Length: 111
Ligand code: SF4
Ligand code: SF4
Image (tube, rainbow, N blue to C red; front, top):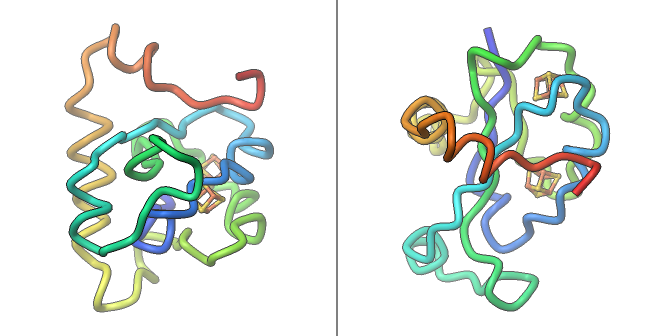
């Protein structure tokens, strides 16, 4: 079981979620293609893409879900039908990062 970041993060990406995550399992996926796909510009110039949650690191505490201003975070069993592809995307991107890439893309409240 894990939580998943879905489409509304794209174009928002304000990182409120990372402030409360006790295990720092959010990672940056800085994909310009995602913004093109949903036709949304980044809220902060140049800050393309979205955050993803590493499914093997998430402890399923639920702390992040109410913090997201655009309701982009769901339990994996509860992802709305139109966004189910994001469950796989969170896993594929985070599990595909090498150790160096994980370190480089980890997003924490410490910076
Ligand atoms: S709080 Fe929501 S919109 Fe902001 S970075 Fe986290 S998942 Fe994305
Ligand atoms: S459910 Fe808890 S551990 Fe998982 S991403 Fe959210 S805050 Fe982090």
